[in-house]
Structures are given as structure tokens and as C-alpha cells.
Length: 196
Image (tube, rainbow, N blue to C red; front, side, top):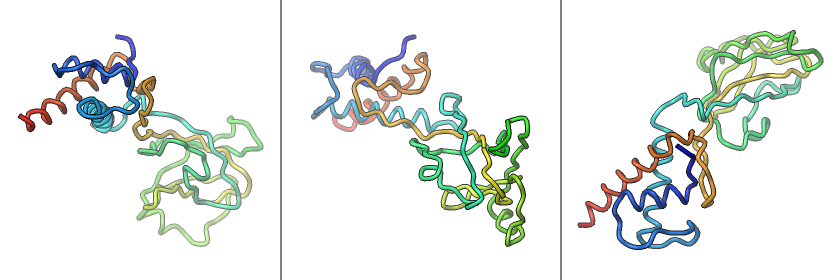
């Protein structure tokens, strides 16, 4: 099945719910029942995405520079990740000196924060970090701090995409877009049942 835009999902939800009245032709400036249908679709999109960890369509890989100036990084500020990180993959990360090629890469282990914070302070210096952790403030910390710039390659799951335009298409593969519609229909049925 082909991908659907946000507007097409709203229109399809309108039809499948059996709601009276004309279907919207845009999502801009909706009021009344049409605005409700839009919200049900947006809620359904988020519910579908958050129903399971590890969806492949939300997976991505980032390449980041770690410097000798810091061992702690904010993903948004320091790595310019525009969509919030839902979860970092704890395996599959690797690092290599920025001055060399990927052939010099080494795996980066993950340690839970409670154990990580017990590592020796001040941290020993090494060419490249060997472990990382996710701190309670959702920043990443690497150990030991590199002595020169290092390239880190890490995988993560993204937060649900924000749909705002009529033409926005969810990252979810098109063959699953009807799952959003049917979840929106369920949301609509639950809500309209309360109105009768």
C-alpha cells in the first residue's frame, strides 16, 4: 500500500469512522469535529510508534566528534541531533582516532551509570575511549577522555516524528499507515461514544 500524508490519514479516518459532514481538504485552521479527527490521528501516530521499542524505521546511526576538551556531550547541543533521542543502542558503537581511518576502530562498551560513576577519577587518558554511559540528564559520557579528537559512530532510536503539515508523511513504512488510521478510528469511537 502507498504511503499516506497526514491529510490523507485524516480524510481516511473521517470516512472509516462514519462521521457526518465534509472531509477536510487541509489541516490548517481546523475546528470542531475536523480538529478532533486531526488530533485522533496525531495521537494514534504517537501511540503506534511508542507501542514498541526498537522499530527499524526509527533507527539511525550518527557520526560524532569527541574532543580532548570534554568527556560529556549533550546530543542536541554537541551532536546537532534535531529529533530527540528515544534510546541509545548499547551495543554496536565504535570509535577511532579522527586522524586515522575506520580501520583503526575499536568497539565502545556500555556501562550503566551507577557503575560508570565509580570509575577512577581523574580519568586516565587514552587515545580513544573504551566505554560510555547514558547519564541521568540524558547526556552521554565517555571514558577515558580521549587525548585527541576521536570519531564516534553510534546507533539510536529517534522520538516520534512531529507531523504538522498536510503533506507530512510518517517515517513508518507506507504499508503500515492504515494501522495509524485504524488506531485513530478506535480513538474516535471511544470519544464519540462518550458524546452520545
